[in-house]
Length: 455
Ligand code: NAI
Image (tube, rainbow, N blue to C red; front, side, top):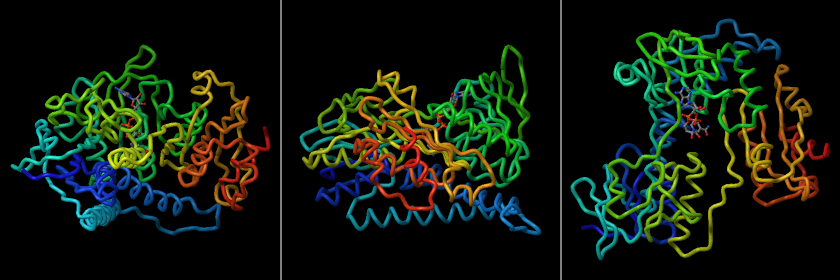
């Protein structure tokens, strides 16, 4: 039996961040990863999709540069080359994580790990024919696509007609027709990518709006922008069958068919807990997710659950912070998890980035708010760099205290500036305090400051 201070199961953003922070804190750490370090985010999620989307942006600029005085005679898109570059980007970053683990002396075990119980040495885990013991255990196993029970889905996944976020990133060719089931984050990013590089994309969404919990006005604007690029949407639509070459769905009591060369299934994700052995130590699970408190503790003392597996936010950046909070708790440092200022981004063009309350969530919490709507046309940089698209910034301000509670943007650069808004929320700044801050000019972020003078 090999003994450690901390065993961490899962080498995605949560797991590798926890391993690095715990080792830096002087703990002896073992990290188990069945596949590749970096998890879904690095290998088949955030990073590969952003690499593809960036290439598509170049392509789009080359095709539509006339407004800016740039005409390109012959524009081609080499998808195979883009995918090869994506693989190289992933390889570089996985190597970076690997070397970080090495420099921290983290023992990395490339194997599926199963919790087997607890004895005097600590929690026991079986992996690669060995038993490991740890005084503390961090579960960071992430999530997997949730597959709805649509007739035909199993067969068509086996045939390679229906893909998840994993397989779609490795398509060798651009499908002529792509049907996306689920108009959430993954569905919209992939719809934007494939429509830009040549597919005819149809998005079928069960709800009346796209982009899930995103502010309704921004969802509608994003839909309009994607429609301008040619994406078709079927909202409030229920998929009834997937069969070779088509997706059948019901909308308004009528049946429709969307023809497809490929189908992307992006209907949400579920925490990965199967075969983990949680029951061997009695970890409490509710609706498929490991239940945690604001120190990321489970009901079992010494066992923590971070990242997608606790089902709270399912975002890599939240997992990083949860990792730090869990490790700080193990190290006896004061820290706790706050979820009121978690930014979320949809990396379409334009991007959508949000943090904090929407009008709806604030009202549901019984808070009276003022909503300020600022057009991004107030930004000189926005006008200089765009061709008249609609961009919007919405500020949610608590009426009583004048504190900023939420910022929601549809605009280029939104992903890069939203952390500034998160900082304002985290520090509980009121609008007079924010007005005293100097924003760089010209930037799109200036619209936040401008909006505060409209209150
Ligand atoms: P999601 O929860 O964002 O969206 C799923 C959508 O599918 C929902 O709008 C839902 O109403 C719809 N849906 C469910 N069943 C359906 C059905 N049978 N027919 C039609 N529509 C149906 O899930 P998604 O896009 O799969 O993403 C999974 C997770 O990955 C999310 O938690 C997301 O936060 C994370 N992610 C984050 C990214 C980012 O931060 N940029 C990028 C990609 C994923």
